[in-house]
Image 1 (spheres, helix red, strand yellow):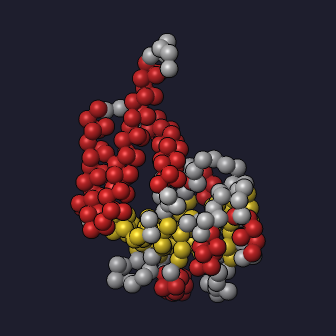
Image 2 (tube, one colour; image 1 turned 60 degrees about the vertical axis):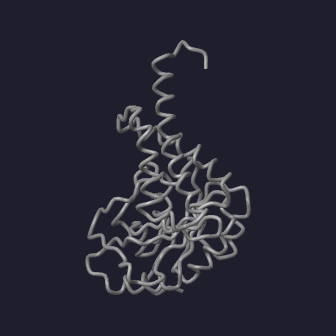
Image 3 (cartoon, one colour; image 1 turned 120 degrees about the vertical axis):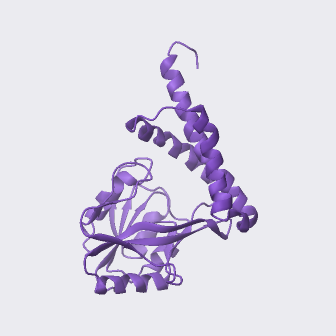
Length: 262
């Protein structure tokens, strides 16, 4: 049992794939809060096996609208936000415990995340600063897709790269089929974000934004060193941007031509 009252908060929906390994990696937490969107697989059974505190939230297609509710159910002084396809290394867990002991006014800690696809850790998918660990009440999520939490109180710091093995291990997708399904669903939700920001379609952006995404991922983030899995992931990331903008064009076109047959 963790003495520093770290609550691990996990939002789930049909998350059985590696959920048991996820929970095993944080089993020494003060508590594990599982906020489930009415899963139809073994997710709840696995959560019960680990003695998790279980609450429920309506399905909303993506996780951000349920994050704040899940966090509100936690009793710990500190919150670690995980996804059900992520593991915490022993080194990271020790770092988090020490951080709570030595904290002054640093209330939000950004964590590195290593991503795996097709059984391989990808350099091009590494993230250095994810705001996933914070003192309760000092950060909150918006309802927008892919938005990071906002700091409400205190300072944000990050784990230095020199801290070996202190990272979240992210097992991103079971297969490319599931990635394409998620891509299609998430790019639909992105249209709401475009609308809120009053973003308009641009042919120039349709061409250059996916190209930039590929160049950034493959060359700047060293995806070319990740072999076949790297080039696959770089193209998939570029495809996400292309589909996102293509759907924006489609939406605007249909609004301008409501009398056409579709």
